[in-house]
Length: 381
Image 1: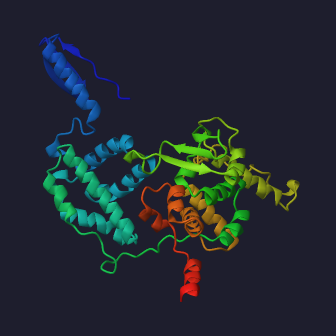
Image 2: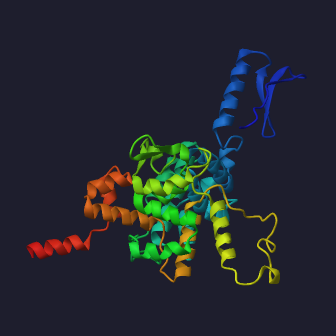
């Protein structure tokens, strides 16, 4: 919370003054209603406008990015805020001192080319470019730029497949049960249970990482997880995840903690991994380092309060390499659940379980079953 500037008397002029960010504002005769109203308006602008105090016609790209990120901290979720920080990084590297009014189509294409030169996938480069356009749109809404700038950038066509130097990425495929089974022994018990649970309920990786006991309603035969912060919360959509007996058996052991603590703890996972390593030790205790003796007392990087989608994915990737398997991601578990449900229960059931509002979204996640096609061909072919 910002510390509010005070309404003060300037004795030599008998005027009311207010000092904000090193600048003094004269408000008129001290004690009058007019000066009080002017002071209130000034404070309101200071609290709501991230660009307050910066002259719009002299605002640099770097100042504009800082102002936008202050706005984004309260407007976007944690993951999207991270994406915007990444998307605006090339603006700082290439055009930090440039006046924001001089940012146009040529500069926008140079920012997009920043990702192309770093071997980013075409879809990723287009998404990051879209975030730059969203940043420009916000500056238009704040009166910093003319709407013409935003309209001009929207006229720049996105990168097309086969018509640019960007590489293409394969669509996400469901991971097989066999691959999951072979990966599990190389995961810590915490991460292994996360994988088992996600393979049952089909939630998003981020939803699983942020799960807390307080989100779980256990009064019925089927538990209901209601998330406050999720991918489509900003649209006003509710997100509920339903957990049956199999999922409950996995989840129960992670509910014996404060309601606002995260169910799956990286600290527990690291401790389990170290215990496993110690149990496999073949060197006698008297002949080598004891556990922890060669570690820093206060390392710079410590396990966080919860897994992120990145740390969860890296844990799985590390286990895949240990097992000699192709690396797969947590998102593939969600795709696998969707495919199974579509095959056995229909696309409507897959849509309900995955929390999609439109069947077309579930079509993206659920691979068309070859087994069904073979059955139909055998019957009607």
